[in-house]
Length: 497
Image (cartoon, rainbow, N blue to C red):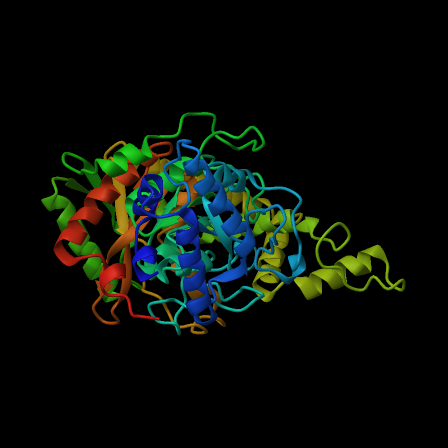
């Protein structure tokens, strides 16, 4: 079992295709790993044991018939519990959807199944994807496999923890303000936020519709690229879906190079609040890029200093609108429907019982920002700042091919450390938020461990919209250089569970 769970997704797929392994063997190995460690990690909210084994048997039957298998056929995956899955629960980490079983698959879910990827189950997350630590889940926090007393990031902490705990070689996350990249950074894994609109949002429970984006999570850049290629592409069911070819991400991951590329370093992405070890590892990464043949260009993007403020007006405003559908009358939790309460009272009682504190906080913030007399001062002004941030990126990408930064200002903090300080929690997304506001593509990959706490540090790479292949070209080159010099931190230095 140990050998199987340490394989990359690409290696697993190759061994299944050659007959060296069966998909059932691979799935059983990962289910056994989940049984062994998930009581401590709590990465999963629901394990679809029967469904996963049935999918695996179907892959083995295909191979037995001589049918050609896809590049990820038979590879297990952990799916963030924000995508609808026909026949198994989708809760979005909230009590208000506890036990809800969707009657249909999200487009992303369907594409995974069509590619013969084996879905092991649904992973834990901050309720409605609102948080940076997975502490806001109604079903309890997830632990970081590097140190179970620390957070695995958020909102997709369950997916990142499943990867770091070797419970799955692949996972899916969503990124509204950094919820793929920040968990990847603090768990020593790879996470990619594709260009906004590159991956369908149909069947993804909405938090902030102009920011939400699903994406791939993995332990290597190539594995992320293979998964990216499976889930991306135009979807007529999603009005924001981009009708354009998927960039050649797998080819870029297989042919990584930064020779001759111009790499930007933004001065706003360092300073007060950044952990010394994070800055040290980032500076080393910049020096490594120079050694690999990149030209480093200093950039000034003054609007980035306003990104956090703009985000926490835009995202809550959109969430207050999107979450209005949870009224206790159509689906999910219903409280107070005893014949003595009006429909309005049932809705109020249901929301009081079903939504957690962070969700309520953001709904109230957003409703206030959108209210009569305050719209222009708050939401309208935030949208103007969003335009300035987009223009800063456009100016920057006239000078450079990609931008690099730390993914997060600090390594993983202790569970409970920031629970009573929302502003400290929000600062975890300081480096990731500008990309969501502009709609660009971005990746986080490991760049070593911080010397003061021996915890993972992430390097963020940002590319222009629809140039996602640049992420993989740079990311695979950096990854190869890191592994050659220092080894893979997750495989060689992560503590045993």
